[in-house]
Image (tube, rainbow, N blue to C red; front, top):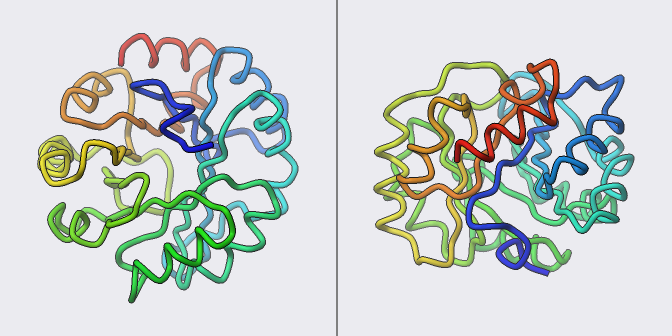
Length: 224
């Protein structure tokens, strides 16, 4: 199955980085019941980004729940040498991996290693990198992730200039390549992001910072 086969035209992706880790399984089940099918899993190594976040062991605990519901585990690797983790992530239940332009010397080779593990591929780029450089390197990608914050920490404010960066990226990429946005996504910008060309909208604080994550997910979906 490809992400394009599963995802609707616009998909709100709950980012599990923002979840209550003591209730992670419960919160995933609640969001599956609310209709979420694509879940964003952030992995930080303490080098490419300062925080060390979730890893394959946590992924293994929850991926079965998501797959049993017909969902997708979308793993965002904020790591140096991301290819070192592909085999372990695939075994833990990852469906796709998104690597950073800034962390890869040879994106094509990294994508080939991901596909050899049966994984879908995505390319992320940070605010200091241009949409043109990301589009040029993204050949073979299923999605391109435009970071709308500096990667690493949840809860940062959305960078408004990201709207134009997404619009430019949409002009440069083939129509079948999905555009994802991550960072500061909420009810006040999801429609603008969709209209600019993003169709995979990653939300952490705006879902898990809400008293009722299921209601927050549904409200974002309606707003988008």
